[in-house]
Amino acid sequence: MKKFNWGIIGLGEIAHQFASGFNQEQSSLAAVASRSVDKAKEFAEAYGIPASYGSYEELLADQTIDIIYISVPNKQHHSHILQALNAGKHVLCEKAITMNSAELLEAMALAEKNGLILAEAMTIFNMPLYHELHSIIDTGKLGKLKMIQAPFGSYKEPDPNNRFFNPDLAGGALLDIGTYAVSFARWFLTEQPTVKSSVMEPFSTGVDEQSITILQNEKNEMAAVTLSFQSKAPKVGVVSFENAYITVNDYPRADRAELHFNDGTTETIISGSSEQALNYEIENMIAVIEKTQPNRSLFLTHDVIDLLDQMQQKWAQQ
Image (cartoon, rainbow, N blue to C red; front, top):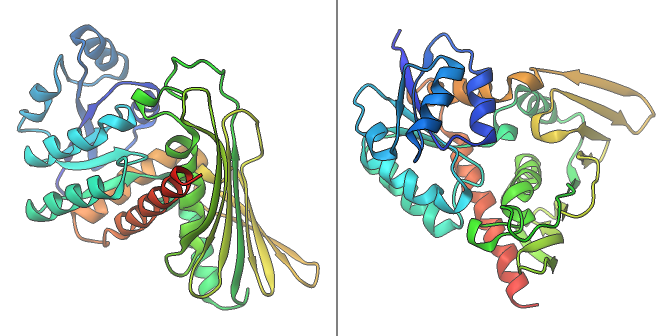
């Protein structure tokens, strides 16, 4: 059994989550890189990682590294993905994987050309619960899909200089929390929708502070996506069918869902563990590399990024 060595580029909060929970038999965290060698050393020592580098280029030149996990700010994803792929590394990149579809298509083409795997670290596409729910839907007992609700509200301190509101750091609700809401909707929609309408209210810096979006596909399945950076809201996804509806609490890393049937009965579905969310991403990445499963999530990621593009195009017309 081949052992895969991972390297981390970007050592922010999500990288700490990735490293602290890393628990794999077939993979090991072998190296980290930061623009500060001291920061890289401190991170490596904290998590028992053998190698640390004071530049990203040094990490990419390490021939023992098989896979790069990218967790730098959104605006830097594209360039680091291309550099890693050109260095012969597989890439798992944090969401949102790129700023737009053009960037993603370029990265996908390079991955295919170099025979490498590219994937987005989107928890929803990797949690066992969502695969279990799809299996239930496929039985037909819930009937046809009709409507999806995907709200996500998060209060951020209104500081123009922090990454959430800074346009130079790709701030705004859409690329931070919106990717979860749109990914939730896209997971259940049976085919790609289009953005029928979208209204956005900007923050003083110009980035999107809150928005409401309606998606619809040719099967007349619809989804409502509501986002806010200045008001908290429960992350409760609702998927409505002819015969029942599904509720998923805290849907980004959910391991539990409720089925509510029209006759008043309910059923609880439990699958996986929220605490292992990032490990599922790692395991599925290895499975795709070893060709024991196809890279399905990348095509859903492309659909999501395309929808984010459409939303921003609607906003530009406001």
